[in-house]
Length: 173
Image 1 (cartoon, rainbow, N blue to C red):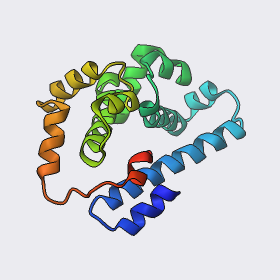
Image 2 (cartoon, helix red, strand yellow; image 1 turned 120 degrees about the vertical axis):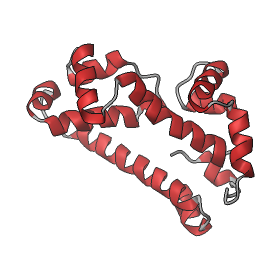
Image 3 (cartoon, one colour; image 1 turned 90 degrees about the vertical axis):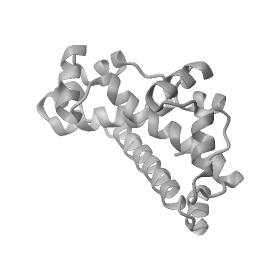
């Protein structure tokens, strides 16, 4: 709540981004807690009959991806599909594969942390599910064509990047 209040008071160009991320995280948390409180019955049966529930479960998995080292097998178990069936469903929903969807979800978080926080590459690696800094650096260089440090320097040199406060850096997306 303090981070959201600081983002509203800040009024800088990045404040809306921070506020949007915080509100998204809060809503995701509330929905997860409600889902845990009110059992819907066997989700695999309900998800098989309801494509919207299956999409919700898959979206929720990718929303939580930043907080864990989730694997395809984890999502397969959650929606009760084989890996090939899951890839078919993800291709229908997003027009891509599971692996590419993971990249599409992780990369914006990494870019956000590099641009708007003073977290070290090691801390960003931990927050985005990479076991080692080198893995994050290699991943980032493969998909962005530059190292995380080079990206941070280039983005911070761009006009309109707000200064961060300790409160904002300590908050989560």
